[in-house]
Image 1 (cartoon, rainbow, N blue to C red):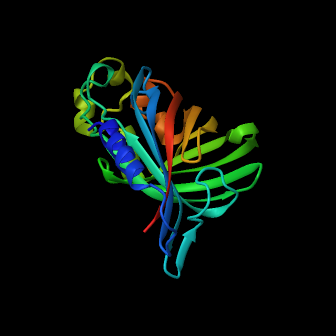
Image 2 (cartoon, helix red, strand yellow):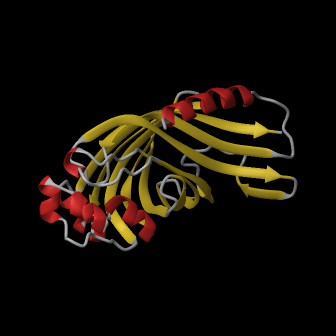
Length: 263
């Protein structure tokens, strides 16, 4: 499954659908970002992988007398309290090389919602996602940002992050079954208990993110970020991470399209 094959057609089609028109009682405001990222090839990996990236940001919905958020406002770092979209794609992990003996883990697509409060100089948020494709587990993130608003709409942000997942998520990416433990070799065999490893749910990483957003027009902008995460708890104790690396560095850059639909 290629994320770019999904995001690029969606961005193009919605770009055509979002042409200006007369304001209606029904409105929907959101943003889509598509681009590229570099990061660990899997949770705990030593090596890096370049691949597609994407995100979804929800601003508001108005339908007759019901309104969520602000469908008439900007979509990124606008002051106020409201819902936000939550999206993550996790690439397939193959049981080869240093992971020889482990089963493959299919690519996953996580979708969900979050809640955020943004002021002029800071922001706090929490997201909750479900693996609609792939792991079928629950994961999420809490975070905070300090915000700098510069000339020409430039927004810089920086702040801490914490990622969490339920037991099913943790077993999918950090667990080793007894059957797998009997088949592993090399450095993984040296750190894998004979009965395997079964992690519990909870916070699996803490991190720090630095990011920037530069609008190019009212509808388009460029986003970029650099992030450092450190795996902890059952994640750091996993044989997969023990033979790899706890510290995970990633970066991404993308093109953002804002949509203010009236229907």
